[in-house]
Length: 124
Image 1 (cartoon, rainbow, N blue to C red):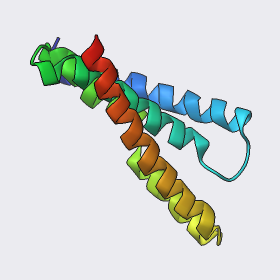
Image 2 (image 1 turned 90 degrees about the horizontal axis):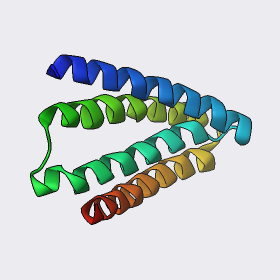
Image 3 (image 1 turned 120 degrees about the horizontal axis):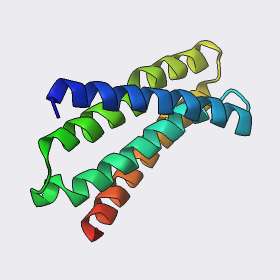
């Protein structure tokens, strides 16, 4: 598969998945905390960890899949810019404790899930 096409398709699918994850989380847990972004960043970190653990760290991957999954899908599904904008809005709304919690939970969750993904991927 062409590199650009792989990234394009993966990124499009990841972006659509992020959109629906955000909508679903807002219905599931309404409120001011950005659960949708937390969910998409966390799930993306897990997926990337599993992929890297199963393939790249063992030196056994087709580069088209790497572009499709790692750069495309996970890049489209995760979102640092939205995380930053939502945290900024929380700060602007004087929800400082919620903003700090958002930063802490995103960082901790994504690191733990990425590490768990690496471990899971190595088991495959």
